[in-house]
Length: 467
Image (cartoon, rainbow, N blue to C red; front, top):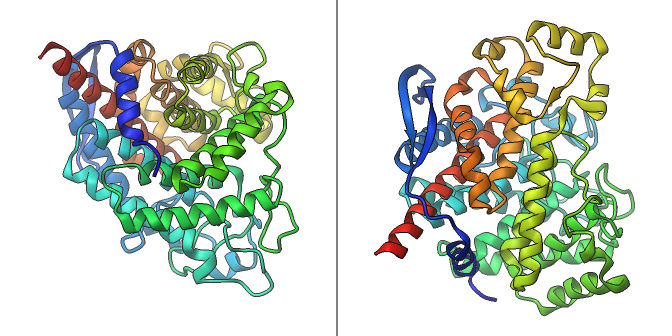
């Protein structure tokens, strides 16, 4: 295989890190929840790696208990105890409620598992812990199960399933999955497996399986012009657009995916393809990844973090230092843009009625029609919002949580340090037992793991430098 990613990454981090051992935070009333969800309260005046370590394990344990299948370890969009109210296996096979699975609670399994695996690896590589190792292995096995579905359970009349990363499966029936997949399922699957393959935990057998799986996925994407087709090989998936446009959005999808294919397979074809895509039209695609006024983040205000996830992976895998410097600056710009953007904004406002937004504003004392930035959204959070439906949670927890995820992905120690007090408040003030959405739950866990990684990594850097 190519170079060891953890070694390259840690060397880069050691060179750029601010040397800190503990992080001071503003005094906050922290809510520590045990696995039963029963909270106890404790006054916190300092934020350090020990407190974050303990909180991260508690959040992760509760999340895995409620949202992970006990046999396959697949992560779902709602608590498993509610699955009798989900889309049934027969309806999944019939393409209901939509062929792409929205509303089924099984549509984002590869996305949730992939983000989780990368966050667990980040934490483990910074400070190994048996709990983290156990859950890394389980999460990898979940991705392996998802990626094997098309070969293990082929569907009649769908001849082009090999290499597809499906949505699902239903927890009660592995043959019930959606072949209308998406860009985010595919890219997350590719990146997570490539990074795991270079970890100290991956066995030779697992690395061999990853090479074979990613080769099939890459060949299918390439055959279809870097777009995603359904199992018939003809119909474009709902989020299956081609990634080859010469704009920042497409470049942020295509380049990380292709370089991850190389790192996951070791096949020089993918490295050559990556360099070809970089060079096309006098390097226009690469120029689009430079920071500047042309940069756009996802118009959907709670999904911009997916682009940051991909760019951060590209930063980790890219060996060229001048390119890495550009990517790091881009990550910081993207996180800054997300922290400053409005919610709901013109894009998300269309998903709910004017009366719903007006009621939300009046009930929770918004000073304007929009929340102006992630920090304002979190500042207005009140625990009683958790008892009042999904919309206040979306506005005051999910929206700022995505921004904090992006901040933690920047690899910028100063920026991360500045935002850690808010991260810690979110990790301790939100009673997750009152949050039903798996998306918010998994992201809170991911944010905790990345915060854990940051604090342990910088403490180690200090010990190494001063020792």
